[in-house]
Image 1 (cartoon, rainbow, N blue to C red):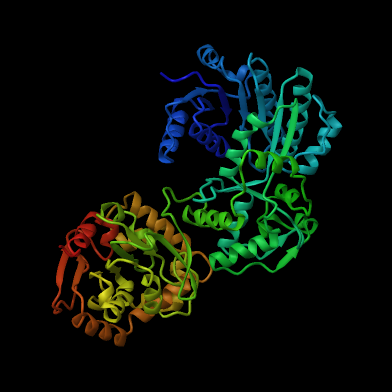
Image 2 (tube, rainbow, N blue to C red):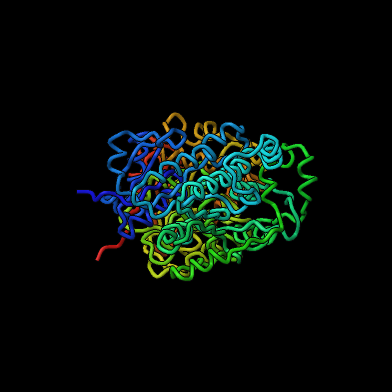
Amino acid sequence: MTKDPDTLVTGAAGLQGRWLVAELLAQGRPVAAAVRGGPARGDTLRMWLREHDVGDQALTVVSADITQPGLGLSPEDQAQLSSVRDVFNTAGLYRFGLGRDEARRTNVDGALNVARWAGTRQHLRRLVQISGYRVGGVEASSSLSEGHLSRLYRRYGAYEASKREGDAAIRAFAAAQGIPLTVVNPAIVIGHSLTGEAEQYIGLAEMVENLWAGRLPALAGTRHTFVPVVTVDHLARFLAAVPEHDHGSYSAHCLLDDATPELPELIAFLARHLGLRAPRMVLPTGLVRRLPRVLTRTEPETLSFLSEDRYDTSSANALTEVAGLSHPPVKDALRRWADRLVAERFGHARPPLNGGFHGVAGTRTYVAGDRLFPGYVLLHGLPLTAETWQGVLPELDDTALVADLPGLGRSARSAADPADWLADLLARLRTRPVLIGHSASTAPALRYAHAHPERIAGLVLISPYFLQRRPRWHLRTPALTGPLLRTASPQRLGRTLLGSHPADAPAQRALDDAVAQLRRPGVARRTALWLDRAQQRSERAELRTLAATCPVPVHLVTGEFDPLIDATLDARVTVIPGTGHHPQLTHPAHVAAVAKTNVPTG
C-alpha cells in the first residue's frame, strides 16, 4: 500500500518538476505529483521515472490545474493529500511571445493558488516557489498599480514580467498569511551533468541551435555578458534539501554556477567542442532590438537576459555546503548538454542516437555506442549519417560503435584521409569487432582491413559501390549534386533511396537526420565531393583489387534491385530480396542477421 504523500510537486511533468520528483523518490520520500492533463500525463511521468531507474511505488499522481481555485483537485485527491507538509511549485509557463493575460494566468494567479492551497495544510513545513535568477527589484506586493504593471510588461515582455509580478505577489501573500516560504531563483537550467538530458530547447538552447546550423553570425550583448547556468540534477538536489535546511519565515536563494564562462567564451567553448566556428562580432543589445527579427533570429524578450550583472549566491552556496552538495564541473556539463542537444536534433529526434563529439584524426567526430569493447563497428554510406543504423542496432547480439564520417553528418570538416580517420577511431578498441561498411564507407573499411587485419574479426560490405553500376551522370557532378542534396526533403530523399518501399520509424528518423545535416553549411558540398571521388574509375579498380586480396573474410551484401555487376570475388554473397541500395533502412533485421553470421565462434 502506498504511503500517504508528505510532499506535493506541482508542474511535475515539466523539466524541473520531473527531476525533482525523481530526486525525492530516490531519497525515499512519498511524493504526490500534480500534473495537468489527466491520467495519460501521469503514465508518461511514471514511464520516464522507470526509464531513469527510479522506482515509482511511493508516487501518487493527481490531476491538477493551478489556474483553478483549490488547484482543481477532486475531493478524493484533496483527501489523500491531507498529510502533505512540503509543497514545491515548479509549475510555470516558460515561453517567449506570450500575451500578458496568458502569462499571468499561470505565473501570477497560478502561483498564488498554490500558495493559498499550501496555506490550508495543517502540518505545512515549507512552500518552495521556483522563480528565476533575473527576478527581483519588485517590492513584495499583493497588488501592483496598473501603471507599474504596464511599465513592467512593456520593458521585460510577458514571460519575465509575469515572473517578477508573481514573485512580488507570492512574497506578500506568504508574509500576510504566515506561510513559511523559500523562493529559489535558478539560472538557465541545462541538461543533466552526466547525460546532458534536458528536453528543453528555448533560450540558451536556441542560441546553441543557431550556432550549430550556421545561423549565429554575431552575439548580442557585450564581451562580458554573463548568462549563468545550473544543471537540472543539481537544481533537483538543491530543491529537495531546502525544507530540511530553511527554517525561517522567508528565504531566497539565487542558484547558479559562478564558474559559468561569460557568454562569448561560453559560445566559443561550445563551438570548439562541436567543431564549429564561433561568432566573432558582439553587437549591443540596443542595436539588435532595432534590427529586423528575420535577420537577428532573436526573440526580443531574450535580450533582457543579456546583462553583465552578477548575482548574490551566498545563501545558496551556504545551503549547498551544509547539505553536502556541490556543482558538477560546468564545462563538462555544458559539453554533455550540447552533445545531447545535437543528438536530439534540438527536439526533433526521438529517441535520439545518444553520442558525443570526440577528437578523431584531428577533427571533431560524432561518435555513439561502445567506444572500447564493441562487437561491431558500423559505418554509414551517403548521403546518410550514423542514424542509418537505428533499425539494425537493436537486432545485434553485442554492443556496437557508430560514427558520422569525417566532414559528413554531424562530424566537423576534416583534412584527414578517411582511412587514417578510421584507423584513429578504432585505435582505442579492446576487441576485434566485425567491421561493417555501407556503400561509400566500404572504401575506408576495406583499406583498414588491409592495413590492420589483426584488429578485426571480419568485414561486411553492404552495397559495395565499386562492384555495382556507376550512378547517373548528375550524381557524379558536385556542382549539381551539392544543391540537390542541400534542398532535398525527407520525402524526396526517401523516394530516391527507398523507392516505393515504405519508411518505418527508424528509417524515417535516418532520412530526417540526413536532410537536417545536409542543410548545415558545407555538408552537402562535402557529401557531393565524396560521391565524386567514389566514382572515379581508378578508385573503383583499386578497391576491386583490394577486395579480391583482402586478408580477412569478406561478406558482400546487396539488395535484389541493386545487384553486383562484378561478383567474381572469392567472398560470401547475400542477396536481400525486395530491397535496393539501402537494405539497412528497409530490412534491418536481415542486415543484422548477416552481421551476426560473421562473428567467429569458439
